[in-house]
Image (cartoon, rainbow, N blue to C red; front, side, top):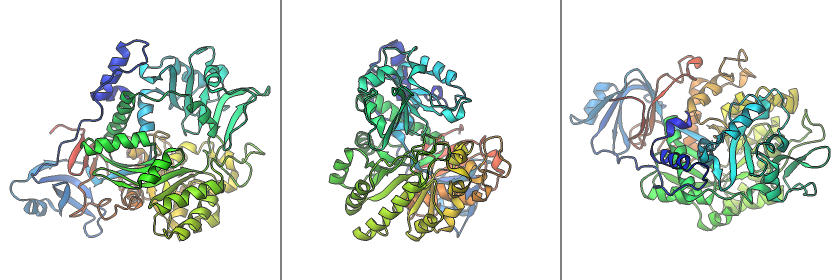
Length: 572
């Protein structure tokens, strides 16, 4: 979905006003927030479809379901459901679609998605030259103060796979600061003016857990990895309230359009949480948000003080910590050297001691702990600390989560499952990374990477997501990647390390049952059965039995949250 298709409503007003202002970077104030979805109707509604997959073992497939007061009233044949619904029920025939329980992305970033929708989008560019052209044609909405922002570049997709540099940006932007986030969010590409404003010179030391890439002359090249990014972020002016609201509105709209009824937001800053908290109170949130508090920054002190929160559509019960970087920028922490960079083993963004102190503080306060761990060393440290801390705090049943669990040693698979931790993984990471991941870690370690069936065999619950905006939030793409481990052209044949593919039902369960369990909501969501929340999605194909090749071109026809239609792609 392009930005142009989102030009209605609040976001459209912001973009229109900024474009009329020419080069003015100040966004005029606008009404904030999405429009409140309608309240669930008191009338019972019966939805009829070619196929409804309930994931309820008692009735796995039905023809119809009835919804009343935001809950599933009945499922079964059309006649059975109509009888249960009563003669005044409203009937909606969805036709040749497959209805599935509400799809939840178990690891995404709403604020980042929203910012990516309105700043320079560098996803999918094939060359550095194309990236520079997009940057030079930036829309007015891409500016925060004087700074030009963008995201989504990936040098691994370019013919020249070397990192870009400030020298690429400086001729075009000699006096305007530019900061462009890599697709994984773990590196920044900046120009000389951004370095100057951040006070970064050849004499600046690498911060703990970060790297300032340097040329042969010792000068910064313009690439900042992991904790080094904070040197620039510290001088970057924040988005205005209007920009912030517009970005979040765009993100929520996009989520509903791609068929998401819920999002686990992995590392929510306090400003975003307060805004969503207000919108939830005002009835404006169109989908369910399970927020993980940002445990990496100073916001954690407020989250610890206030504790968990339960609203109508917004829940805060978890914390997100980030232990290492990403594989693409060689920031993932490995036990042994990178195969394509001898002498380098990645970065730990927190010392093990500081990480454990934060884990114990949040566990003691009643939070579920989720930790970003990509490299095998990071995963070992996470399992060590979570196991020790859960026992010390008495939270062995806290459903603590390993976010990504991307590269693991054989013994750590077994520990993860034995400890009842949740493996929160993202299928499209594998299909995006497969062209270069083996070069990073070699032929042996790659067998413990993106290994979903090995995680399942350990006894771990899989909760599936996308890590948007690192990947697109399109859940159909995630279902396709999970089933095939192939790109959109069906390559490689049989899938990349195809033995780790998930079945159609396993993939669907990861976005429904698994995600619900990971947020302590398995008694209310993840299946369609009487008494559970009426969250469901109508798709143009059956994600379980249809050929996987049909998934990338499939359509979301309807998204329903708590009995309310929050997105509809058809006319009644």
